[in-house]
Length: 200
Length: 118
Image 1: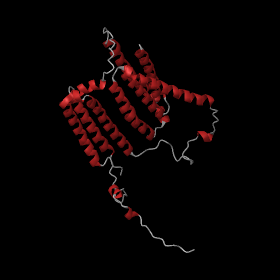
Image 2: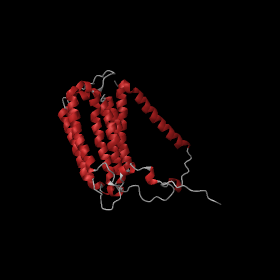
Image 3: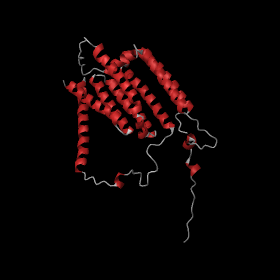
Image 4: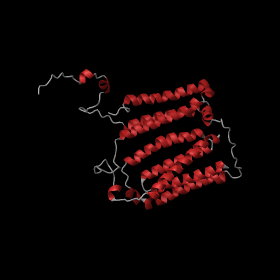
């Protein structure tokens, strides 16, 4: 009962935040609304007793991905007027995509599940650990998927470095020599001068 | 299980309520005498040089992307550490392969100089 009330409360906030993403005039506000929407979806995961997914959503999406989004939005020169000028031109395409998504969701929710009774999952005991259950199958049964994930991460590291790295060692470029800075001694840098008494 | 999260729910409600109350008090009781100087962009006392939206060095993005990748790697470690007694030696081996692949990426990153700023 309480869970149902909480679900509707957080789902309503999620919808408001999602609307805010597409209606906010300032792109930075849109990103902050998206952060808020992610936080609400984390709560929905939690209500499904999927603790680990909830925490991962907060740590990875809110903590890292959205910060990168914010970075990109704040640093790119986004001209709002220019973006709005294409509104009517892209409107038919946008409506088409939205329709397809709505039909797909309706298909899953209403037509595919027709005749299947809705089963309320039984709540787990207080000492149930979703993370432990997940780990129990992830590293044994789905080990192949795990290694593919590692491969993907490796690929992403290499791709990010190849795309953005620039070697900047032009001749004459002044760079810090960190070991030399660390190894420096007081005698190399300061000279203590003995000053004799000065007569007025 | 969800009963364990009741303190967090209370905390969230109190935090949201406090935020609303503090902002509301300021909004209701504040006199709000605004003038152009108060509302203008403040940049340490001098005139603002340029717009906020200017382009930054791509290396900031590189650092952020590499952070996300290793953040994800860490997310794979948490269930492993929690369920270590259940997955046994096979799990340790699986994580060894996972880690070995990422260490290859880490060495590449290090040798390529992506961690250096200059």
